Amino acid sequence: MTRSEIQLVRSLADKRGRDEHGLFVAEGEKLIGELRASHLRIRKIYALDGVFEGEDGRSTNGVIERVTPKEMERLSMLKTPNNSLATVEIPHYGLADDIARHSLVLALDDIQNPGNLGTVIRLADWFGIEDIICSASSADCFNPKVIQATMGAIIRVRVHYTDLAGYLTAAARKGTEVYGTFLEGGDIYSGELTRNGIIVMGNEGRGISPACASAVTRKLFIPPYPADRRGSESLNISIAAAVVCAEFRRRAASK
Image 1 (spheres, rainbow, N blue to C red):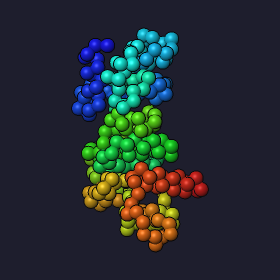
Image 2 (image 1 turned 60 degrees about the vertical axis):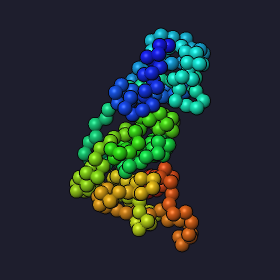
Image 3 (image 1 turned 135 degrees about the horizontal axis):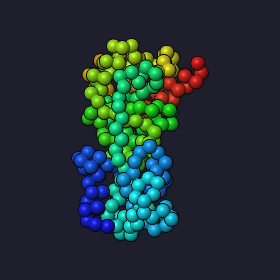
Image 4 (image 1 turned 45 degrees about the vertical axis):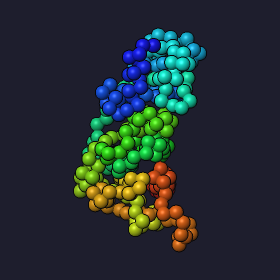
């Protein structure tokens, strides 16, 4: 491997590098195998001997280059390097104004933790949610930590970045239900829930921002058990998102 190749791969740990080269990093034979069978385009695969056996040179999706364990250590973003690493072209998806009129959509307001974002993308995939709309200040979905946490869900879930407050306001004006979780909200298990709409989840520490909250048309609350129990102040965002998505899907299935 050349020094410039290693520098390019390492630069993808930073958003500036990813934006400059239009690439992100994925690690591990299973994840790379899923990527090779997907619509995403792999630029190059670096693999140890024995991985993707018999596929040296140009493969069906990407160019495979054999590297030593020492070289993989220099390339990897992980504490314990995997057996393969790929550079993948960042996809660009259009964001339609009316996607939530026909499907259930998640909106993330200033989510900062890469692990939380990756987990939310993974649970969106589990519940058949194909689009996530993020505020511009949210964590980058192509951060290596996010990619690993999605466990391949990044292939099937489209993540968009936009002026979230403006998008939510416009959607609400057109009649789309915009849901948000609040301590003063109505019990999610007893209120009416629509099959389609936007579910807004807020920042890990501050919750939903005032600008986005003003666009919310239905405030929801996940009650503790029993209802009058005094315990933790709130749920982790990924756990809260899982509870909310599960209830929306349960209602839709029962109709």
